[in-house]
Length: 77
Image (cartoon, rainbow, N blue to C red; front, side, top):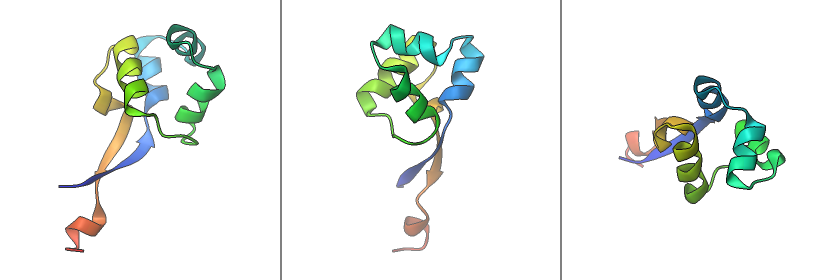
């Protein structure tokens, strides 16, 4: 089954972990603007960064996005 990424859940995961976007950016040596772009769905996290983020805040990498089934596959296209 194919899936698509829905809304980014990074902000929710950060709140659960008690960490800030600024802390995450500093921890991973990223610009804070890049982290905010992920949060605001302006950019999709590359897998390597998503894995690092999940490790830093203590969550599963799949918890960083809503994951939805690909509607085209359900229609048999």
